Amino acid sequence: MGKPDFNPIRDVFSGLIMAATSVPQLIAYAETVGLAGHRGLSTAGPPLFAYGLATGGPFMNAGVTSITALMAKADLDGEAYVAEYGEEEYVMLVSAYSLYIGIASSVLAVVGFGALAKSVPKPVRTGFKWGCAVGVLVSALPNGLFQGGGSQLKQLAKEQSLLNAYATKYKVYFPGIVNAANVVFALSRPMLWSLAPTVLFVAGTAFVMRGKNLLPSFLPPGTEVVLLTIVAAYYSLNFDYPGAIVGEIPAMDQSAGISLGPIQIPVEVIDISKLWEVPLVERCFGGSIVSLVLTSLLFAAVNFLSILGIASGFESENGVAWSAPRELLAQGVGCVAAALVGSPPVSGSMSRSLVSRMTGATSQLACLVTALVWIYLQPYMSVMEPTPKAALSAVIVSAVLEGIVLPKGLLQLKGTDAIVGWATGVVTVLTSPTQGFAAGLVLFGILHVLVGKSVKEKSAW
Image (cartoon, rainbow, N blue to C red):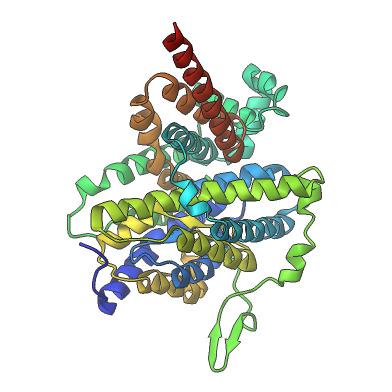
């Protein structure tokens, strides 16, 4: 037990497997944020490379996750922003936000928040996780059931759903209520679903969730995701698939990138001075820099809970010691690197970290190899262009569906803990992840005081 002995061959092998099996996730989570899928491919490498240099865990892996994607989209009101200002402006907005999250993470590391994060109440963490999972489902489902994706669902709900009209009245108080109401409407109207995307989505979700039992045991984890993507792309390319696809992946300018002597790194870097000029405060935080700072700190704190859970698991199961300040700083470094290449904020990825351990990683070299593969294979990523978005939605939904339908953690909570857990989850769905997490902490504190006071009063009698 403990940190494994360094073995570069095993690290390279593990890194290559991770690079191959994670490509569909890169596209899917970019779509979740509200960006074009190809941006997930072109921006994933540098943040992971920076994180790999900073982290101390041999199995740790990072990137844009379902939770960071959902949180960024909610905090920045991604769909509305793209509709009003266009995707290029939204890329700059997301990048600027990643920069603030990176700085906030570094500040929290310096002031010792890493140790404090371990004391976040379990009911809040459990409810928050469930609420985020539901949010991911709400975001992914339209592309799985409708040929026109989210825009088609919005139009249908606007025309036919009384629930949508009712929810719209309360959107100013509950930003996520309209999307949640639209998904309820969609699930109740199967006759409106588009046939080809729905069949692909349902079959793909089932295959990814049960693929481990169907495929030979010697195949690496994530093989089912790769197979689904290949089959779906082949079907789309050869049988006139009518649904939405990833679409054209722009070729990178050959003169762009970073030159280090004879080495050319195909990465387009954003001038950091331009990020400070992005009207993030004015357009997303009501003109209040205090609101931006507090939201960034809360985002960074919530973000770190993923890393805390992953690293704590490896410590208990494998005896791999870890440093909370170092991992929080690694998160900050990764987010700053994400900002410089146009990526949403990054965090520790449970699924990728588990795959790294399962495939024999022995050091941070494994995630550095993954990052370099993603960076240098960008010119060949056009093979993903015909991939149906319904298949990518299947990849996302398969990761959260079981935890939504059967939330074991929430069902185990009792008394006031159950109230806090479920309330945190529901508020997270109806508002945003950051607001839901904050509401959970406040509710936990209030009930803790009230219950404690009630116990004291009974003791006095």
